Image (cartoon, rainbow, N blue to C red; front, side, top):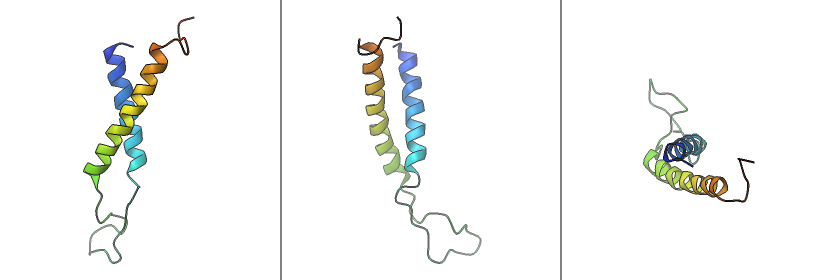
Length: 77
């Protein structure tokens, strides 16, 4: 796998996992302020979710890299 392909795989995996992590642990306010959306989270915890996403995306990237670079499955037959 070329380094550009590796970056693309990581970025795609990161965004997919990040969008899956967004609804995790979301708590909406009991009584929202006037003018605010009722579905807006109290604490979105975006930094924590981004860090967890980075770790999960790195594991996914490592698995994809292992599959592509090993003889486990050949993409060039």
